[in-house]
Amino acid sequence: SEVSGWVILDGWCARVRNLPDGRRQIIHLLLPGDSVNLCTERWAGDDLPIVALTPVIAADAEPIRSAIKQNPSSHQGLVSACERATWCEQVYCLNGIVRLGQQNAYERLAHLLLEVRERLTAVDLVNGSGFQLPVTQDIIANTLGLSLVHLSRTLRQMRGEGVIALRPGHIDILKPDVLAKAAGFPHAASF
Image (cartoon, rainbow, N blue to C red; front, side, top):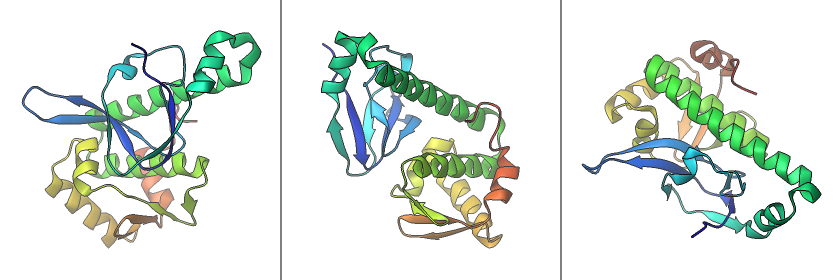
């Protein structure tokens, strides 16, 4: 059976890979403005389970998906938007592979924070230097392949350097240029 399409209006989800022993790897964060199963062309990520990381409000996008499927030539703008959304999700997954495989803890966290800020900026959810960060440190650590202790140490280092400011559910990126230099962000695969 086909899965319906939807768009995240509020809240955070993730595509995950569950392991037989109960562990899971967060493969990709889904943020407000992201679509899920909207495009008619499938990719490997579509088969990954999606879990809500926070309370989520989503809009049913099945009418849009059906319109595209029935008559794509009449909805070229929507088809292009879907292709772009799929391409973006694949780029974010590739960024995650690079973070996990080649970057140290500081670089991983810097890159993820800048990527999230870039994505939230696109949907007008960044206010000045900050944005809502409604997930736990455990979720961030899992996304980055770090232990909770190592993530906590890295956050403390960034705060000590005056690069970020944290308060419950919110982060301010005070020196994005410092994070960008550390993380190599943006890079050729970025937009």
